[in-house]
Image 1 (cartoon, protein in one colour):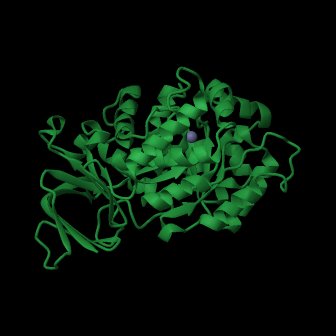
Image 2: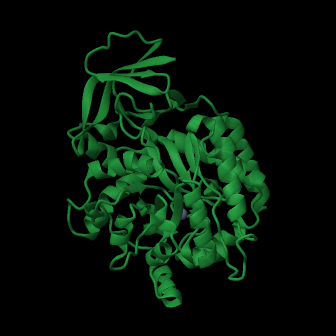
Length: 431
Ligand SMILES: [Zn+2]
């Protein structure tokens, strides 16, 4: 199957920034982009789409989320992290069934596709259910079966390591490479050192990526220092976790040498500004990370700490909050935020064949409808994308050359059934 987008504006990288080709052509053949230019290609494509008034850009990567948490959207408003987690979220999660996670996963993917997400990195239980929704929808995802351990006497054999590896072996690199499986440790404060050490070694043996929550709140870091005389970053480093390609969510409270340690081990950070602001965690030092050369992706986190999966909103926040906090309009640039939401996220997912619009790359592409009151005039595309565009301006989402969403229609999913099933499950659960 081949397809030619014509008359579109196309966002391409230009050095360390971005520019848009106007009235341009983008050709897709199979899974790949095979042409980008302002001249009409000589090749004939099976289908042509006139995309005048639309901007093509790389698909967004939601680099840290908990998609089935749509079941808990907005349920714990106004609480700090430890109360939010222990008093509201964990007790509800303990009652959720596989079936409920399944319907929630399909429902969340509706929201992701409609707001331009072509790939997401998830952390939740019953990931087998989310895997079904990934398979059927056509989206890309890095899932995992994360480990938790509150009992210091638990043995490695009794731990969640075995099931986590089984999930990896069964699902990694399935769905034609769309579905990847990572290893995952929920956090320092929800685990025991001997389990984390053994699991980190297993991750290395399996040549896998490690996904963790790290230094999210001030109290998490203080308690860790009290307990281990180490920061969470030092704790994970000492247990060998960072000997794996690691992606760490949050990192709002790195202490003195923590960022250098992360840089030394090439740990990627997933920035979640909505969640950090909503739960009162603080402002992650993103500029410092970028200056050190740390790869920073962007994620929405789950919908109980956001409360949506809208990456354009996340981009808007990432592009402005640090400037305000540091009293510096140049602290974070729009182009850096686009990098975070696309190519940097793809990199931390281990997907180096996507994240930018270039010939030869995977056709993971979205379109914004520029024919909107709030999107005119356009002087600089990166500024419009990060600070004017809304998630609802996304009018097309394509993954691996296949359109999954266009003009409000889902081409792989039955929206009405998914919404109905989800509403029924929510009513049943909370009655
Ligand atoms: Zn999270």
